[in-house]
Length: 77
Image (cartoon, rainbow, N blue to C red; front, side, top):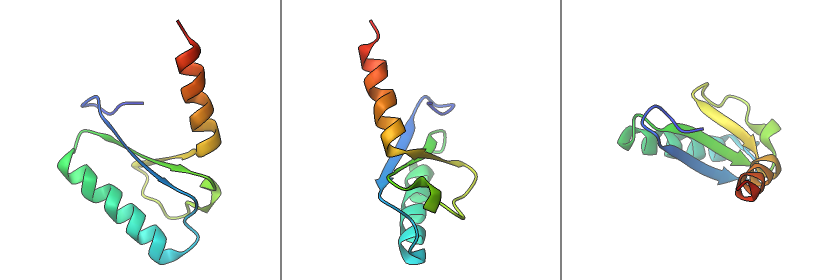
């Protein structure tokens, strides 16, 4: 899912239950977006259910589903 500029920014993390961790990860992702304002923003997580309070412009993905999707795309001719 590329943004309007054709770019994605992906960050990976296990979970965001800890508020300081959530703030740090989201702040870093948004800072990267400032350098690439047309990119779409993605968090790839082991526990996506812990992504409470993430801004609506950040797409949250289960790492398992995201990785399987990558494998499926590589299988296609």
